[in-house]
Image (cartoon, rainbow, N blue to C red):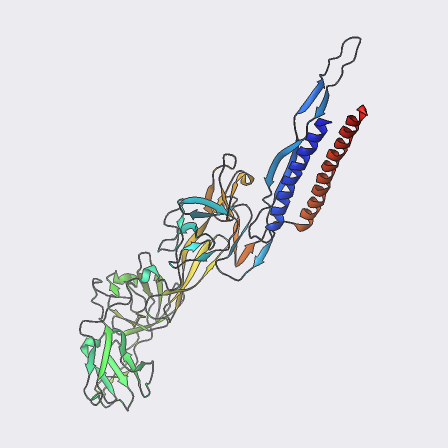
Length: 478
């Protein structure tokens, strides 16, 4: 009877542990990335009353006679099945679909989590907002093709307003002589020309708006080929002087704030330090106009722009069969049209450009964890890969140790982390704007709770009955 008492006590204790686990599962039913645990029981040692005997020629064998001494916790397993998804609409929220964990640096310790409710701190670090642990990944190079370091994950840092790396030289300083002050009477056609403005880039006039075509009051247009500014008929710089700002023209050597770097003229290409404004006309050899095309093979009178590694751009020209139309010079005279000519590029080119850097306006995260930024300078937008989220897998992810805060660390039985890109080598893919919910199933937990309650109740009844039997034994002396 004493054995039954202590066996029942072990049952009470271990059913209480199982109830603790069930309670923890239910408590975390709404914890993002939580993985439920399961308790397995195992028998305690048994007391052998009689050992087993082997059979003989005249007698059969007998089995051992044993009395069990109770129950113990065999294991508490983490069930690492996929949780359901919850759409959040937040760009930095991420869900892992498949096997794997996000990698974080928690104050120097590498930890792992399935909870992808990330945010950003003041410096733009991608972090776990509850702990400040930094999400790990790989930064991409300026060439937008490969990560700078592959295999050594580091902090991911970006924020809205970041300048595109290839645009770090913007804004280009104005010419030494700028601003140029116009305080003289205009020509009969309300034009002003100056040799210092030939080939000038990013020209502006204080208090006025630049337009293409015929200007109205308060507006002007600019022809960089001839250094010619055209105003509306009511403009009077004699009474109100005009300050003109601009970037110096190309020096054709590519050594000082110059758009042109000398290249072989026969190839029809010129390497430039910054691209034309979208849709602007580029003048080859200072006179022949080319219009922009998206095609990689520009046709007659067209050019295309291609970004190169290192921050430069390649302008490729097609043949030009459009010639030059007649125009009016600053003195009011008419310059005759030029016959069509099939001419390829030389290093003498002129165009306008946007003297502002592209800055980060938005970003997205794809299924491979690549963070792609959308950068705009107010006139056009470009995309650039910023970083890639690291994902870790383990030979036995159920062997990881839960250290709180939704974090796991490695153990002797989890295996080492295999860290790399999402969606590769069996690693989970990433779904952005979503969170993985807990994999706790309340119907299962409540059913287990009932079974556990009945098991606890039955063990308590064993103690009650054993106590009654002991009482009967004591009463034998009466």
